[in-house]
Image (cartoon, rainbow, N blue to C red; front, side):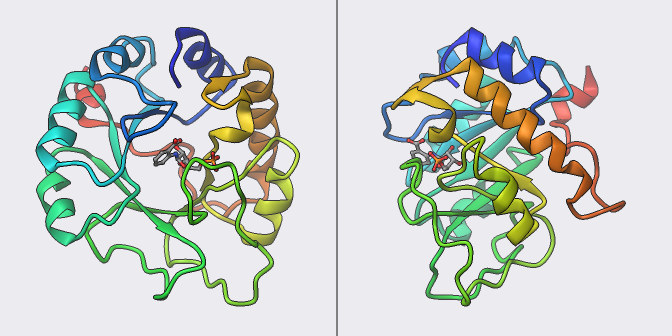
Length: 214
Ligand SMILES: O=C(O)c1ccccc1N[C@@H]1O[C@H](COP(=O)(O)O)[C@@H](O)[C@H]1O
């Protein structure tokens, strides 16, 4: 998200989380811009910062300046980086690309959630959901990679993730979100709440500690 209109649209239609890209990307926002956008977001919606192969100190500073509720790492970050950021956030999200060399495992680096994404993050390209080699990580996991309002239902039917994440699929052109597509995606995904994991699924992502304290 890069504009107040996008954030307000997502919140109004019931998004559980909104994201801000700090990685090198046409979607990149500064920590100060993100801070202004984060202030618009009600406590029950988690604000996620998206990073890729960035210095831990820079990630930490950015998360503090913007007041992020969650940190999502998309690159080759290893256990040291995860450990360094563990106390910085209540929700640490680890992105894993599929197809993968290793089995997809949850919690190896102390993360709270695994995000299974396509090999090129933010490209809008889907991975092959029907692939025989896909074994989901245990526990809660998020699905990303080329999702759109039109394919999210089928993706969830096939894979039954705990949650879904989208960027390109709600854009009119690269880097420019479409309020109509944001609304359509959330409506399509919300309708799926009924088929997702059942009674154990909490209604919301964990709230960031600073929001809980307010
Ligand atoms: O959006 C980007 O440019 C980006 C750059 C670096 C790391 C992650 C990025 N985006 C994230 O990728 C997934 C899937 O995006 P898409 O729906 O396939 O476009 C999502 O988590 C984005 O936040």
